[in-house]
Image (tube, rainbow, N blue to C red):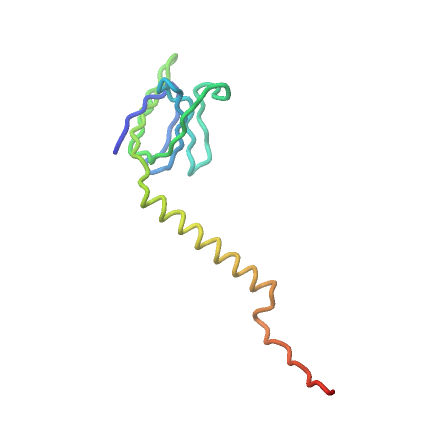
Length: 121
């Protein structure tokens, strides 16, 4: 499912990037955060407003520059649950592999266990 957003700011976001959109209760876009590049474009301060935040993938971006009114038109597609789950599993697998490598490095798994001495009673 696609959606077209018009933002009254210059907010160029490359096609394919994941974004987080903050919208006011009236549907006005307050902020766009490019999650892939770590850049946030704010149209107005959202700290005192009730906002709805959702994520999507940019399908197309068109920036219209004028002296007084810059405008960005974003066509976004909602992130589907399957790709979000695949991304989460991929990140979890990477975290588990990193934790295993760290435990192997500090845990002595690369050395043979010490021999137990014989007991005399």
